[in-house]
Length: 362
Figure 1 (cartoon, rainbow, N blue to C red):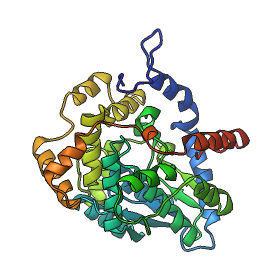
Figure 2 (figure 1 turned 60 degrees about the vertical axis):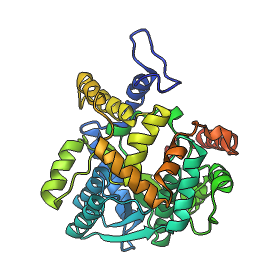
Figure 3 (figure 1 turned 90 degrees about the vertical axis):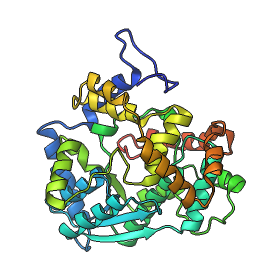
Figure 4 (figure 1 turned 60 degrees about the horizontal axis):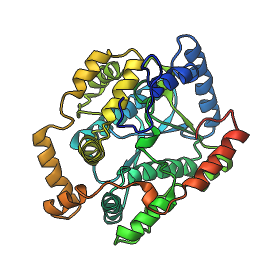
């Protein structure tokens, strides 16, 4: 990590606050041999008990990426009865679609796809790009959370199992992203830059979270934290068992995510997600710092892929390449430049944490 995070600071040993916080909280979250297996066994029992009268006892989100595909493999190995859901926002790579089909079919997992209205979603995404905020994936993040909870409620499933994990995602600066549950921010940006009415887009805000959590009893669980998770080992299993196709960097199963994280954010906002991922791997002793620094010296985007992706993105948005360049070259802004609910959300989450200290899903 470096000063691309404006809030970073270093102690007398030149350790940054992210690493120190990682080791401080690692005791409670990270994998511990023997202890984690016992916790996993109890969690699996609770999941099975919650769904004993239903066809499915858990819901998994599948994207075609390594983490979610490996989660699908694990839940079946643990004897759970998952329903898989993919939120199709129109940006799937060919590899991701094939990976989803192969994994779900070979594991005999029922699979549903929630396809967003493309004209509506395209307009929302383009509005976010025109706003020049760093959170370019805000619409996708909101939609994924919304459709997962909607499906869980529909099928009376109490556990949503996510692919998030502490091994590769333990470090993520707060200054790099803003709360995706702020519907006011999304709607204010869309009102200013959007053209298509937001009628069918699935939103998810604070009150929806309260409803699904406390009134529908839906919980999030992250199985990968209960294992000594190695993405390389997971990849080997997926390739050998499911003819898994590699697609490049983290979350590059989506063309737009690849474009956002490997070009828009590092070039326009000096925000390179590789720093956070590699820092997490270093703290987990998965890679050495010297190797991580060498990795950062490599370009985040292959030049030929970048040129092709720019043309593809412009075509998908139905705008010219020049117009796309104009949008991307606009002066960076903050979510604070638009109407938002930050003060309200911070207050509500503060109250929540004070009342329910044992809960950690927020």
